[in-house]
Length: 398
Image 1 (cartoon, rainbow, N blue to C red):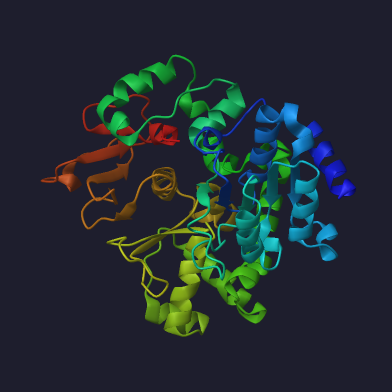
Image 2 (cartoon, rainbow, N blue to C red):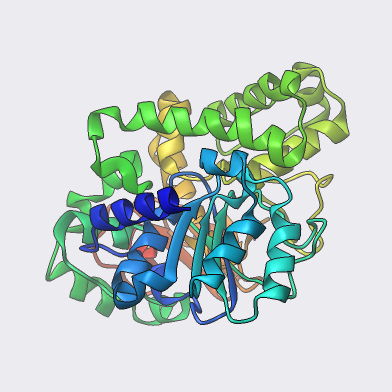
């Protein structure tokens, strides 16, 4: 355990707090058991270490952070670690990448029940099962989902200018005033293109020239390791999943024809639909349905996007045309806190109420004729007009 403490202290010493993700302020850190899910690379580890450094610096002797893929756990159990930690006065335990530890859910349930004075925060893959794990933690854990950087957060990283996030309703009602206040401090289009290319994952700051190398490595890790581990997909079928992802990327936005796709990849219909479902769960795609109620692993999406525009530049740069980028950006930024569904008229339906049509500055409301609560989202404008809202401004929702 001394080695784990030494590693923790070293990580805390190197952790910077000059930029903190906005989700930090949305989490109820006082809950006894907090879970944070998210795709690899979105910054979950940094979030934990920043929280400790900012809020528990005076109590570090009662705090422990460990990554569950540490070799220490090859010969020790989580339960034995907790027992020793609690006997030494430990109160705050932070467990990173719990999905790397076998039977994590059962042990966490037992620890929660047996150590009522211990507060635990854990992180895991976006594929992490909370409700359906063998030990149901849904009644015990408060779980949050963490997404990549918003355009607003990217601007803060690049400029140190801080802007408050806005609600969707506030944006729709006051977008002109909000846009004006932002434009007084920065020029959004100075940063928008770079964000679409390489601004979604926080590690872009480490070495921009190697960003897509690392993004590719992260993608392969998710498919080669996490998918077999957490969804029991046979290793031999992973190339089929990668082929499916490549087909989607080459045709984004993709409207799947299940029969043709099944024949092309040479897998049956149900397996194909399961793979489409997994890609969405892994935050590699966004699957849109006409109605999001009761979505199952065997339901065909009406349309599929890559989860973020950076993936488009990685997987199909030749398909990263302006129209695809616009729609993918909008879908990603809205989908984090809102329900986005396929629209028969317009491009997207949001929260079952609002309809949006995405386009360039010449886009009109012609395709939204007769629809209430409908808006044209327009690229290449800094400030909108009535019913026409700048696309970039939807990057300020979180």
